[in-house]
Image 1 (tube, rainbow, N blue to C red):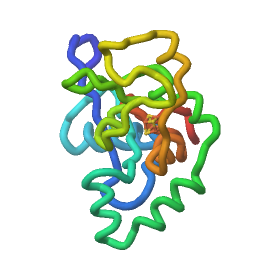
Image 2 (cartoon, helix red, strand yellow; image 1 turned 180 degrees about the vertical axis):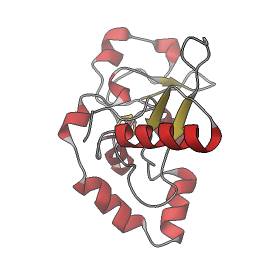
Image 3 (tube, rainbow, N blue to C red; image 1 turned 60 degrees about the horizontal axis):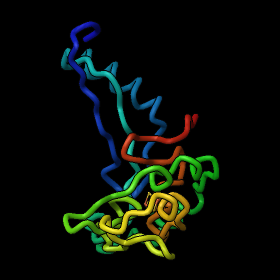
Image 4 (cartoon, protein in one colour; image 1 turned 135 degrees about the vertical axis):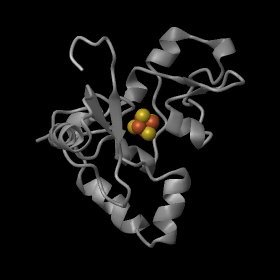
Length: 158
Ligand code: SF4
């Protein structure tokens, strides 16, 4: 609640093979329903798009939704979201010092590449700052619709 000094943020991601709705619209709806139905106040909602990797990829393949979902991500490509992908400003570091463009690439064991140092022991700010990002089909999830990152949507959307 306002002035309580406490904070609750909610993370939302779809449970099926579709993109999340507008973060602003969902936040409005969550505020209304959580308050009227449960008396709960919260600060902010973060909408995440499911990337086709790991268990979600297994689900897509097993349910026969893989092609449709990838096609939906491609068709929802939003060039404005490209400037805000988290791999442009962050690195993920593995337990052994391996460097990854993001935690998704870490899950896929895709270390940074294209001449950038692959381990924190060889850290080189210039090379890492100017590195070419390692991308694959899963990256469409970060630039579809309103965009997606660990801090939710990356563009205002509708
Ligand atoms: S999944 Fe791809 S676009 Fe998204 S943060 Fe990782 S490297 Fe960047």
